[in-house]
Length: 288
Image (cartoon, rainbow, N blue to C red; front, side):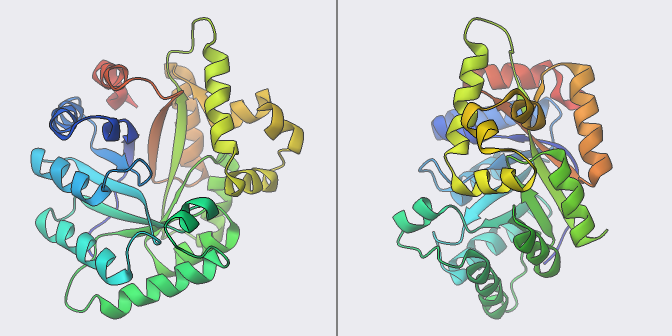
């Protein structure tokens, strides 16, 4: 592995997947011009994240692309090493590779087995190490929620990325892995929190995420009851989402950093249009 993972604040950029490649390339240039240094890509919407990463890196000068995360059920360890090391060689220091065991229904839809995700991830990392040879990997991290996956991230990779987690999870992860490994939580930001039905739209989006058993199980670990999850309670919303207001945003980001976060991926929710995300970025996400 070579290079260091990004620090500061990045932008959750799943909205780019809904754009034609030429439009998305123009958007990442605008994002870089606005002062942001990192965008986060995911693997869930039917576009290849490695190809998209290459397009965005080629189109910009300084932007870092973090892949959070590529599922281990989509490609074998050799294919993962080949793609990641090629991007790292072409754009040194500007790509970071996140790996995830995904969710049961998504893994099985690709023909994968989800019986023992921790074992599968440990074996996958070992297989990557066995085939890497003279190639150099970029910073590598895990999408980690449960304590055992967090521990594996700290032991076998450069760190971890978390999603749909309260600040307390960041603090526990830092305690578990110690001072060295990198921790990058995602932080939901309630953009445009005004208008009729806005709260309903937000809760509806959170409810979609709560349909994933992994997220529900993890939130139970942090004291949220079945009623909290069923109702998307105020306490749950407050723990996961911060208003798009400077004082509140700064306080939440400060809390995440105090808990041990090295980098924060901001996700605007409920998912706004691409144009609205870019307007918000132009308005000054870099002040954070």
